[in-house]
Length: 196
Image (tube, rainbow, N blue to C red; front, side, top):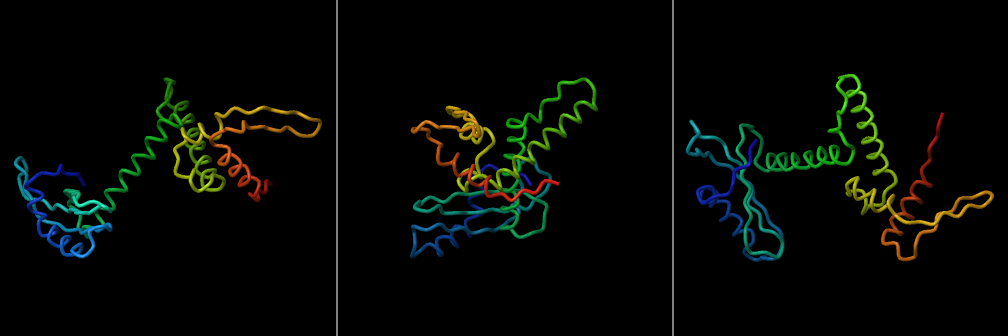
């Protein structure tokens, strides 16, 4: 599956979808609406026609339509293929997070076994963080990347007070992420972890 850049020819081939979307939004020009379709298309250098699936959508509170064109050799429905293609971008974000946030790209040794072990440790850290994200982070923090979570929960100023029995962290009263920190700490306290 490869995304095609929108152009006049592709928009012309999707004109029946635009008519369908016009009919759907005739009485409601405010809400979101979308239609899917497909057609055969042959670009200049291609030796033969290929199937193009497309999505024409009207964003909420906008009058202009947005087009998505993807060339494919798969036989599924246009709606399924467009959603499948969009998930590819989500996977690319996961890969980017693993490279930048967990240093997956770091293979500094000349021996393969050391690099393989290092990659295993990075993968373990990535999985532990994802469990932490699902089990302990607040709902609005779950979608944050590791860099943002580090910034909001770990890189904060606190005063450490030691007494005979307790160690207390006192956050600044103007700490911008104080609520997220305390909610995460509360969620960790609610976990029922049994170590054997």
